[in-house]
Amino acid sequence: MLRGILTVGGWTLASRVLGFARDMLIAARLGAGPIADAFFVALRLPNLFRRLFGEGAFNAAFVPSFSGTLAADGHAAARDLAEQAFAGMLLILGLLTIAGEVFMPQVMLGLAPGFVAVPAKFALAVTLSRITFPYLLLICLAALVSGMLNGLDRFTAASASYILFNVVTIAALLWLTPFLPTPGHALAVGVTVSGVAQLGVLLLAVRRAGMRLRLRRPRFTPEMHRLLRRMAPGLVGAGVTQLNLAVDVIIASLLPAGTVSVLYYADRIQQLPLGVIGSAVGTAMLPLLSRQVRTGQTDAAADTQNRAIEYALFLTLPATLALLVTAGAIVGVLFGRGQFSGADVVLSAHALAAYAVGLPAFVLVKVLAPGFFARGDMATPVKIGVAAVALNLALNLAFMRPLQQMGPALATSVAAMFNLGGLGVVLARRGQLRFDPALRRRAPRMLAAAGAMAVVLLGVQHLLGGALATRGVVRWGALAGLVASGAVAYFGALPLFGAYSARQALRLLARRRLRPGGGSAITPAASDP
Image (cartoon, rainbow, N blue to C red; front, side):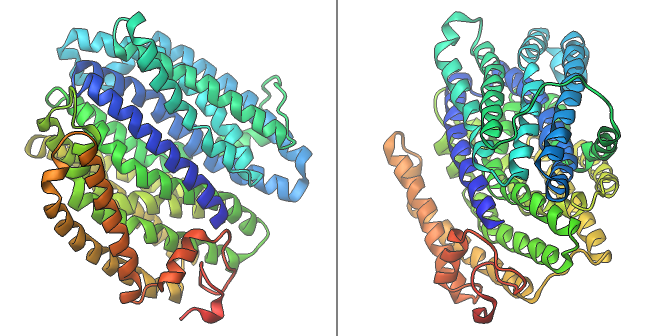
């Protein structure tokens, strides 16, 4: 499993870095103005459906079924299931895409009601959303093919394909802008074209994996009915974080102009550790856990869950504290140029700190949710998810006036903590979540090491304050120095607090598989203290 985590995480990291280059370009060209607000809402809509249908509910239902069928019945039966799912998704999402194009003004009233007060901004958001909405169909089909590749333990192509989104949108912004009404139009076109590119690359990859997909007439077979029944509740259970972020957009549209953009830039930064750690662990864990549950390997499944939690905490705890203490420096260096003003930097940094509070919960939800999905339980995450969404909405309404742009971010973080607590309690009561001695010993020590790192970061940030505020290469060097000092401090503190030796910590990052049973993800059980 760790090999899969590192593959997914590595490609996700590359995609996120390239995504930052794209967002830096957008910030410099558009800032936090009305065109940026309109484009980010247009981007949010297909991304919401992608994460709900594609990466969330569908993967939660499809990957366990596909992996289990592959293990029990062979390649032919698994390919037949995939072809049925592809045809059914093409029909359902094709109709949804057509409906979205027709009724986009009404959809926009629900997603960004605050834009109505500025008719030109509302009209632009509708136009850009109509351009980007076909991305929903393309990327959800791509997510199905990615699920097949993950089920085949082929993680590289599925993870690398997301780089195409950033490459194509950057190219569109640079080269199409002179020929279209606004840079927002160019970005919207780039989004949809990137969906075509991603789907094409993944179809080629799955064909090379020996499982070529044929286009079939949609038929709602018993297998498809089971898949849809599992998928329906997962629309909320697997995608509760995305539903919470959609609530953030609704509330942000009612706040001062630019709030949607400020929250977007903050969310993009916290999505780096969330995507690299949370999505990577969840993606790699689900097929393995599904096979272990299907074949009755109870102890192995428990060990997989513990090692995934341990690996997630190992990286998430320092990332959380680092974002909290260096939010202003990070936002300033990444986005503070061109049309993105100093005031925008401050507002976005406050929102980033509020998102960072919930980062461990965001990541661990992705780690615990497969414990339900692998066992075919979609209903329980739905019940907890509905309560979390309701809590997020209530907190948004309570926070929006006194906290302004921090309100939606903090509400989402608190809702994620609630969601994590609910999932953990239910799994523990069922005996499906048991923290082993290694995890219980290491978790508080990793937190202490991360705390020591935060103290070091505060001191280094004070020393580099002038360099971080300059322009050009100097501030990039200062940020690199800040990041490097944090990494050295954390890895240096781990052995001091008894979490890992320096050698063990490095081996945890480098190992290509997990040790079975013994409680250690990094060394043979006998040598683990």
